[in-house]
Length: 324
Ligand SMILES: Cc1ncc(C[n+]2csc(CCOP(=O)(O)OP(=O)(O)O)c2C)c(N)n1
Ligand SMILES: [Mg+2]
Image 1: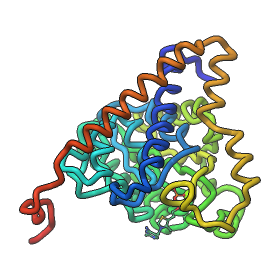
Image 2 (image 1 turned 45 degrees about the vertical axis):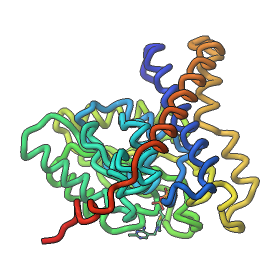
Image 3 (image 1 turned 180 degrees about the vertical axis):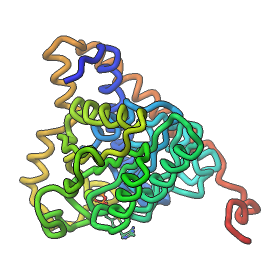
Image 4 (image 1 turned 180 degrees about the horizontal axis):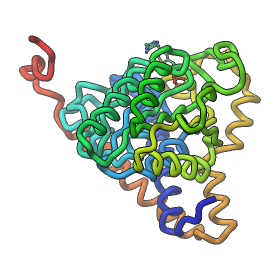
């Protein structure tokens, strides 16, 4: 494992705790029906967003998915603008027009999440091509789920990225489900992608619930991309604790067992990292308490901000449309 400073380790923990608490706060208010958007919570998957984005610079690009709150926050997106977006407010990151599945913030290199499963894959690959053609130094990182990996566009995009040696990193966030369908019903064999010779495409499988494993795996891929050696594919194995969409009570029953969910709760990426840092005396309980208070305040501030922000004015309805 790479040696990381206490400051970096604290930051990894803080970011994961923050994403978890934000998700819980959204969930707790979701049934009020004031957030008029479907939400796909990433509870249980925080280590992927944080471990990946901790390796990136502000001007690196990411493309995200419908389950994208964690990616957005980890890449430096504004919490106020996220919550305002869920409430459909003009001050939201997509001016209240996008909702939870269409977050965007070019200022921090977040070039959008998409409700089209797999939609970000060709876009992020194209952004890698743009970087190369413009001789820029940044890289393009694409988050996508195992459901998106069922689609042909992934293989076309990987082939193109390898062919053109693009600075692209494909991050497969394998939470084992596409809605209610388990991966074993959809994929032949154990590994989704392992067929390319290593020289062409660096591939790696990491424990997606271990932020250190994700960080280290992606670090190598980032170095490879930045030094012009081409794309990588990192599969992060994880689990979605909540249902496909909405809050806990809205998960449909029957497609997975309580025992399965409980066994993954035991592997919570946030609690396990917290425990590790405490055990190794890298953090104190008091420092964790302070982080919790800080996060609570940030969340309260963001919800207050969202709720006092205006809705988009009706006469702005025709703006931001393709109407040629
Ligand atoms: C092109 C397309 N096909 C199907 C859907 C319906 N759909 C929405 S989410 C989803 C599951 C995606 O699973 P995965 O990529 O593993 O992401 P996860 O929900 O697990 O984060 C599906 C099939 C869609 N939105 N877009
Ligand atoms: Mg999935």
